Image 1 (cartoon, rainbow, N blue to C red):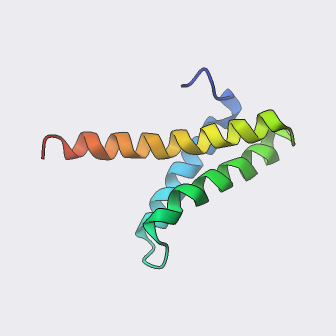
Image 2 (image 1 turned 30 degrees about the horizontal axis):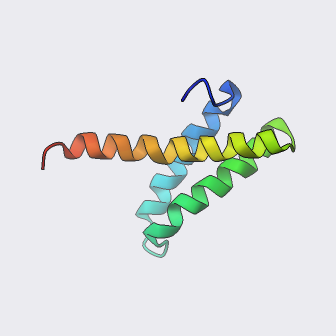
Length: 82
C-alpha cells in the first residue's frame, strides 16, 4: 500500500486518521458519514499539496482509504478474539 501512495501524502494519512478519530468522538457526526468526510478531506489536502490532476484525486482517495483502513485494522487488533 505504501508504494501506491505518494510519500508526500503520508502526512495527509496521519491528519485524516486524527480527524476521523475526532469526528468519531463528536456526537452530532453520524458514523456512516465519517468515511466519506475523511476521503473528501484527503482529496482536498492532496490537491492542496500536489496540485490538481486526476492522479492527485486518486492519490487523495487512496490516502483517505488508507487512514480509514489503518484505523479499523488497529481497532480490530485491539478487539482481538472477543
